[in-house]
Length: 350
Figure 1 (cartoon, rainbow, N blue to C red):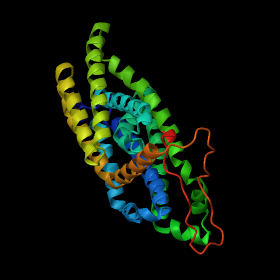
Figure 2 (figure 1 turned 45 degrees about the vertical axis):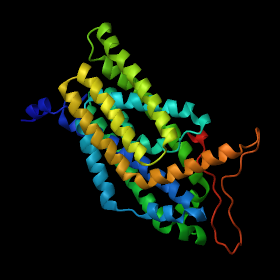
Figure 3 (figure 1 turned 135 degrees about the horizontal axis):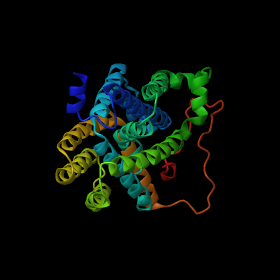
């Protein structure tokens, strides 16, 4: 029965359903950790800005049940998505990230990349684990160890996010919580930490994605037939989406971009792919939209922040060689409270 299910479902890079499930769980944990850390960063940033109290209240609302449901849904999606579609999604996001970084001088949006890469990150982690553990003698035990570490980190990050959203403001005023005092001096480094982690993750995932895709081709001619239209189509698609995002930077643009990207991938795989690849594209579209729905409030905060940065940069740029401002200034005996000054997320954090 299990062999029949494995033959029917588009399970990728696995020899058993258990290994595929474990890989999907690790990928889902990575997405949850990224989203929770970004929520912590944006909440503290809004807390330190009196003009963003409304956004702070939106970020403060957390439902533990939805967090766990988010983990379960993503685990199921990453379990059944095939390796070809997952690898293409990883490569596509890498091209999109490079395009966005190269266009930073034009005032393009940048801070949203931390949230727009959530589904691609999960695909990359699952894809990398499947490739690195392929043929390992104790593969299942290795994946169980990875799942244990990932779930432990996810649990503590969830607890930290809940603690920050409920008690951070009080503890910063009273100054008696070690965790909050640690965040008080280090929270501005969260984007830099995430940037380095994402660089390593997507670097490994890109190598694994190319190896997994090329494994399906019997000759160089077939590989060229696949990669040539893929590269041309996605390059043109990324340029088009970048221009549309510059002219129409709203929240709905992220959803429209997801549909356009998955639609282009669907058309491409209808010509050079298999029937299970088409099913996997539809499943990936559900996963992408699900991740965007879960991070709507954070995307809106990042969008407003990027708009203000672009507006200020267009009016007057900082003098060349100017010293970098201190990220935090702890108030002493001021009657206004212990509200800290913070800097906005700079493009260099990417």
